[in-house]
Length: 226
Image (cartoon, rainbow, N blue to C red; front, top):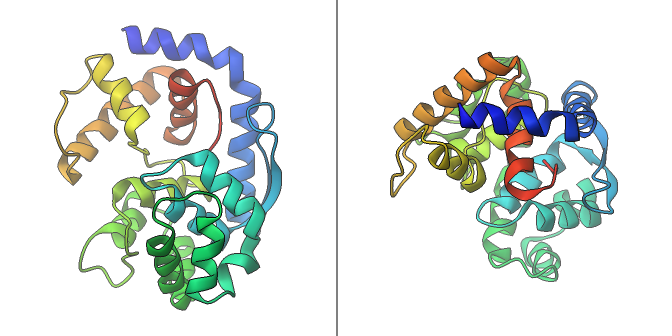
């Protein structure tokens, strides 16, 4: 299978970086903070907390990981938790984010409920179940702006290994390698179908979903970010 060949070719090139990133994610979930080091792909390193990581995932939806990284590095936990919405909007806007006010409002909503969200995340160790709680309409833990992709992104970045992040890069990789058919919209049903295809790749390669995502992202972008 061509997809397997591409991933096997990528693994030795960036395995050390992927392993380091996974350990950073695991430390964040275990200790509540971690030092991210994105070199050599981006000359940035900084300490992140679980709450600032959630804010990063809110910021990167329909935006770029690099912009989210820059904002997270500059603001830190206090920069997300304390300012009023208008001040937070201005700070996010200064980086050129297209949806600064919307994202500031969503961060403000989350910080009001942060203790209950954090509790449910770390008490429920089944990634798919936590994702459902964070993403599905009607759930008391639903985060505004989060679908399966955003919830999976956050969970992977705090140490969960059993959910896939079906962003545009991963989705395109699956289509290009004839693993799924292209659809106009990634519904939850389509998302789970794509996740199952990725799980089969994981089983063939001896990888976890958290690791496979980073390798495919590297194949598509030539970067290992988060």
